Image (cartoon, rainbow, N blue to C red; front, side):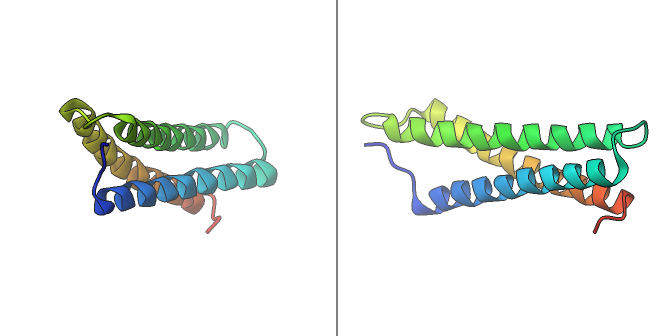
Length: 114
């Protein structure tokens, strides 16, 4: 059976949790902006940006989930191609997480929400 090291599994699960946090934070920030300021010419770009943050974080989360499952479904060993894809997806998820966090924080600062 194909297996990954505990450290790789921990990295993936930690990243998934962090991506869920980014999704939650972006959604909550979007709701606060919409409730306090409505949807207008000034808020629309920020609301769209928060939606993009959610979409990118969701995509990264799903990709990690799917690839992790594919590795464990591989018999007798995972192919080097899928392991490389998983490695690349981890790197992309880390970048997505950092960018999402910065984007949400900038939006909160712009609207004096934090």
